[in-house]
Length: 278
Image (tube, rainbow, N blue to C red; front, side, top):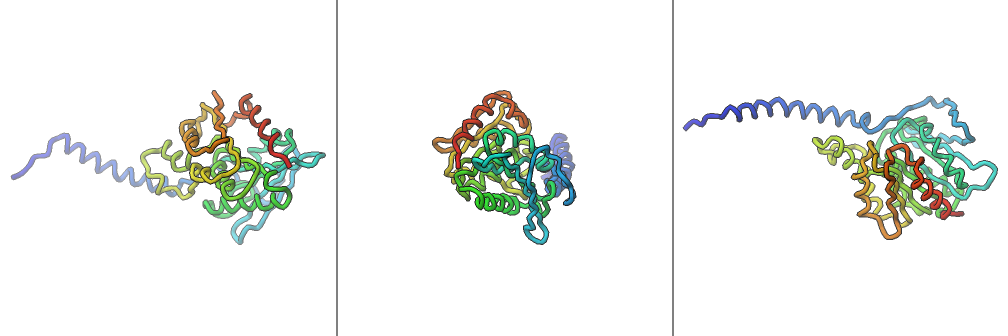
């Protein structure tokens, strides 16, 4: 017995035959070009002279044959620092994009250290999860040669929050502070392009929620309700893994780049920085 296919079924099958190849091609392109989607590095020559507008010490560390780690230290002028802030920055440009944030830490007596990720600034090497972690760990070990663990604040912003949370889960410090974090990089990608299986596609795995579960020092999270880069609803999921004494500070009206302009952020930060001492 022959069955007739309805016009609607024929139209559906025809659409599927067109859509599946397009979806597959899009998935292949997204997979191979995902670094360009998530990262916005700006590299500079090794002989480039930074014009930061404040004193700094630059270190270029040969991490391995194919990798250079660029570390910049911003010392506190004319005084012994109360501690060191290890600042893991976001996905834009390089250290120069974030240097404006040093001032607030200096005001409270802390020097600031920043590293660039592979492909950013003068840092080179493969953009891999293990390399990001290794660079952060190297900065921490150098800081420990100068100050005690409880005089170190690990600070992550945006992309750097996952790396900062990982570091704080592995090494002792005075405090972990996260500005505009994500629950996980894969969940953030899913919120942007939900049609792809990001859990299997992402080459860089940063699971902030998992790392926070083994962080023993106090954790403070800042997130703005108008963050268009990392949605507030994604970050607020981290409340479920915070321990007693941790804090999630909501900044009403705050976006991804302007939390420092809000009283809620500045007041809490000044209070936190007065707690961690040498």
